Image 1 (spheres, rainbow, N blue to C red):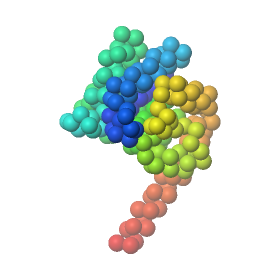
Image 2 (cartoon, rainbow, N blue to C red; image 1 turned 90 degrees about the vertical axis):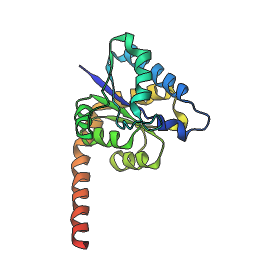
Image 3 (cartoon, rainbow, N blue to C red; image 1 turned 90 degrees about the horizontal axis):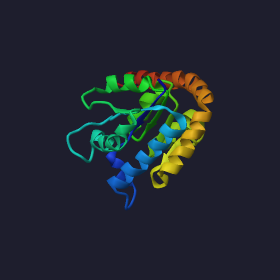
Length: 189
């Protein structure tokens, strides 16, 4: 099936003034309802950080979104018991990915999956600039609405083959640069 993987973090509400958990959940749920209706894509909610407290646990906010959408029969949620390697494997099997957690977007991009980043820090901006040379596949937290997500997703959807080609060309080069840095550090030590 065509799968859109989605990672949302409760931390997003900490980076936007007067933005509640309820608002976040409702915007994401509305966006996903539109995706289901317009694209017919299966939705897989994927927690990346699953610590026990509510502030950091992606599973709790994703579970709220799942509860709104579960009657559609095209939405499921990944159990919080998986480790990082298993989560990366799950993400790598998605056709598209939307992520708030930086490491979830790194997992998807490094697997060649077209990715829309929900940005609450400069890291996602830098990653997208390094790979694509632009910020077209980013929704900044202050702009996060169902409409903006749908607009950016449609752009990514329409440019899927170009994105995949860019990722297949750029990711090996970035991995090689990272390995060179490791070798440089070894020499210094």
